[in-house]
Length: 457
Image 1 (cartoon, one colour):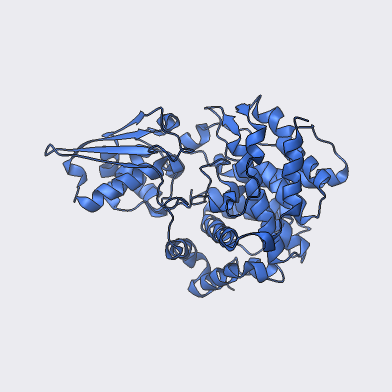
Image 2 (cartoon, helix red, strand yellow; image 1 turned 60 degrees about the vertical axis):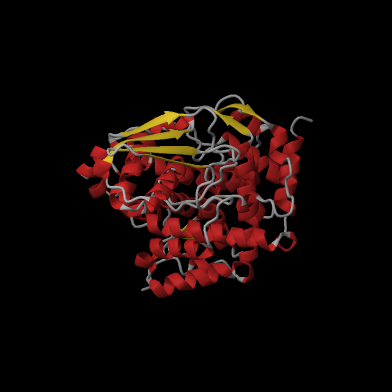
């Protein structure tokens, strides 16, 4: 059968056990969970996300204060898992600090972890069960995404996350392989379809993409329990015909379950608060800045060679925080002028900074057709800075810092978490979360962790 890959995928989801995995895989999963929690906590402070959390409580009065509910991260109140996943995932992507997979699937954790965390808490599951569900959901998301040849105008954020959340939920609800396959197929037919336009315009409806996929993924699992039926091969139906230009079934399961090569340990973490397509260029700029003292006033022009898709991110005049995160000229100029690319460099004040805006106008983005972020055998960006004194500086980057092939240190990852969360939780509770995630596999209940994910009273 052409759809046997789905049986293999469903069997993987139901049979994977933490005790059979390498310590490196489990450690990587804990780092991904910590990183994703940090992104959700930091994003929860934005006004629209705080309003969204209040709305969720209004829509779901039955879940408010219920022991069986799921925590709204950063707020401490509880709602049903559908709403918790939607609100938490939306907050987690808002600052563009969530991790991802260059091999496919976009940003698997922000599409899987919020839903898995909500369902696990509501179901009273332990930390081991949570980690297992996140690992398999992440694998499904990345592999389905990696097997898809996406259309250029489709922004895949949210697209593959639905099936990943469904897989994680099915695992937590104890589905057998047949039920798991149905839930994954169901979820695929419910996947969001999005373009790049909201990102480029800075319309924050874009932040809802992973929230929608989390909501739909949990719902798909419950619809399976209700007796709804799904198409025989959802991924092929959707990704080969509508959202993609081709779908490789064999690639989905090639090497599936091989020890030491799980997608969650082949990910990347973000150390720049913007779209991944900026990161190789920003690393190259920072490398050049370490070797030379370069002032914006001394720069004649900057040429950024990048993958062809990055040409849509060449606007030097973004109007707001979100669109600035999808502007390569802005990010590069802000890096040079401010010396940082953390979340503060994308706030309203620097976005309107005349010096940054003037330098961004001198940044040219050009396509190199050989560049592709799924490749590691060719540069992902090449930066050339032409100075007014006649010198020309150039550097290229293949694997940006934070990628599994150019990894950030454990201290850097923990430092990032502290930076994002200390103002939300306070230093003492931030340390408690770090310590609790480090022993996640031994927690008797996920509530021990979620109970820490709000400011102390």
